Length: 148
Image (tube, rainbow, N blue to C red; front, top):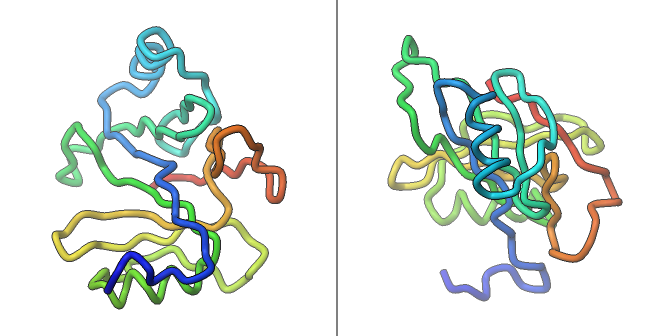
């Protein structure tokens, strides 16, 4: 497989990182003060912040589920979800969960790469993220996803 696999499609964009933290509020305050990020929304278990391009989900760690503080997963924004789904599976990724039956609904699907690293893919984006710097996500508007 080569880098030319996505023929006539824009390159997928890394636009989301989820970080497990003990205190999402304290972490959001730190990201605001240290990096000038702005709050972009509330997740089921945390807070979204953004630099205007990238969404960072600061999610409360759940040690009872064996979670540890640190990077939880990353997310890629794609143009054509179905084509990207086929491509990542052909490259060795395993689908985990998250696809919707409705083509008009927001969703992010989760996969595991051959090294065991979890990643999300979406065609509609994340709160506070934009696919192309200097543009707004006006087609679908900024979307929120409730991280579990």
